[in-house]
Length: 395
Image 1 (cartoon, rainbow, N blue to C red):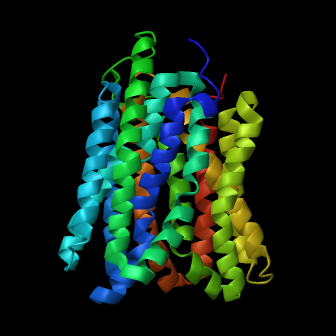
Image 2 (image 1 turned 90 degrees about the vertical axis):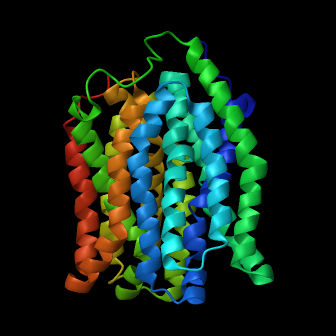
């Protein structure tokens, strides 16, 4: 197979870099950016409103293996087109919501569309097309999409100040229509064409002969990533209350929270610099340990608040590295045949864990205090690292 061109001359990768940034900004980060406005306008409790996002993530997890199976069968161009159109319909419906039931229905639909359009689908397409060379493309895509929240928060704040939250949703829908629909469709078509040009073995269509969950390595792999997603989800969803309970001053807490995103990008840049010289499984283990260390630093911020900044850097770098290398390690462990279904099955457990995290963190805090929350966030990635150590080392 010929080498892929450099990223700056790689049309489908450049298209995915833009489309993934915009779709993440529009259908994922729009929820945390707008949830307080929904809560205030409709009088819902925070728990009731956030439950809709947990439902969306759970349904994304349910859809992931099915979407992956469709990608294995060469249907990625259709999947991205329909998923993007579905996201547009969901955003339009969101502007008409008046009741909590309707709000949940819209976000249930949006969760399914996330399964068709976000990282897991994108990385399955790229891996199907590029195989062992997918790592560079995935790194570039996540590097760009790491700025999605940087697009969402100021843009929605500006539009809300001028015209209200519904107008901000229409603006996001406009971005999806102008950028995501054409670019994601183009990228998926080009990547599928590359996949069809590869050997039949490398692009084997349909599910693998053995059920994914019964294949060697699946449970340590999926369980390890799910445990880490649980810890990350608990921290991200409870971050400001956590730091307040630990006595971190508000200004420092806001600075720390704002540092996590850029630190994720920094971690991805480090991977670009390192290239393929470092074994993916070893780097993943290091990232898991970094997340555990980050949680320790967060707990220690009760005694030395400045450690909240060090926590944020470690949290961001660790999570940024994991988001890139999960599909890479999944391919190494599960193989390329039926990769979309395998990647979807691995992602499903992680998405379920991430959906569970906000409620679990809140319950733990209520029952046992935030010390127990921090302890779980230390233990979860450590347990994940133990599971991943059971995998065969990369050759």
